View 1 (cartoon, rainbow, N blue to C red):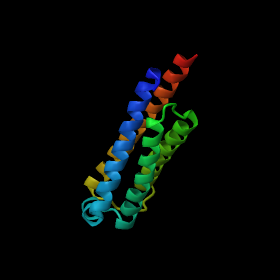
View 2: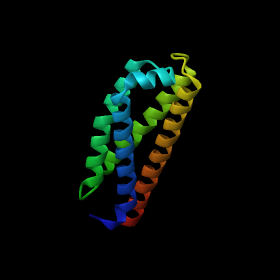
View 3: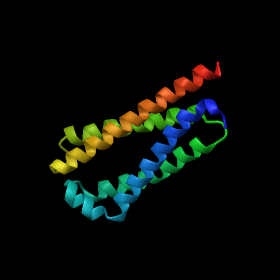
View 4: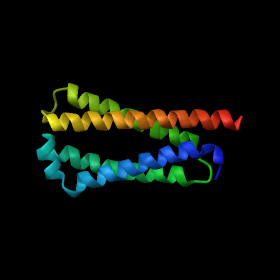
Length: 131
């Protein structure tokens, strides 16, 4: 593995691990989280289902000898889409989450935005070091 991409690899591994953990938690007891968060169980279940293959994709990217920069851009775009969807969910009036539900959606969006930013910084670092 290229030592120059270590930061990016680590960020991708964090992204994969947090996505997988969140996806599994949402699927293990969807109804519990639906009740706690005041969010539709179907929304939480589908979100959990989406997280798992996303986590697998990110893990594959992180563990290849050469990181696919196009793949990382796709991951960043997916993370940005998630953040925008989270904001839209809260501002659109589509659901009436509890205070804990609002905090959960906001916290997830902030964490995903931070991860996307770190992935972008990792891409810049790899690009700068590769030159």
